[in-house]
Length: 242
Image (tube, rainbow, N blue to C red; front, side):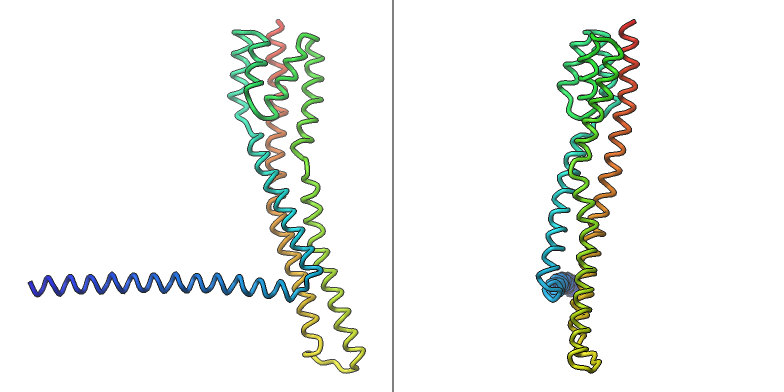
């Protein structure tokens, strides 16, 4: 019995020690996170409200555009292979109207292009092909909407940072010229502010550039899918007309 009690006590002490260690680690991580946030906030304030505020605005607006585009592009992505098969089956069983109904019930640019081609098929295959090409351009414009704003924010953010750096260096040299003595403590603050604006501008540009590259790759993928699907639709319409 004594041996069992000793074992249980040892196990309890081990569990308590492990729990205490885990709690200590969590507390340290929380303190480190809070410390990082505090340092980031202090550095941002030291950078000056003028340029740092504009850089922050670029980041917020750029992220808003990026998130909106990512949601739109994900909703625009469809299973074109499945849609093609459904349209082909509908054409074979119910004709053009049945195929148009399938397209009406499917979201995405590929289904819209299919619908426009099917809607013009009675005017001839050439008219349907022109409608597909024209509406494909319209859909491409919808996919690329607001992406130019994202590229603008990517370009402006580091420029603002560099401008803040130049202004900070000018202020530092003006102090040197006024005092007539090169002292590190005299100009250290201005140089620090100047470099902070550059750092935050570059960080903003890097974050937005990652989103921009993802969005462009997504658009290219959807556009390629639209082009392949358009060719497949014309082939299906040609076979149906025979």
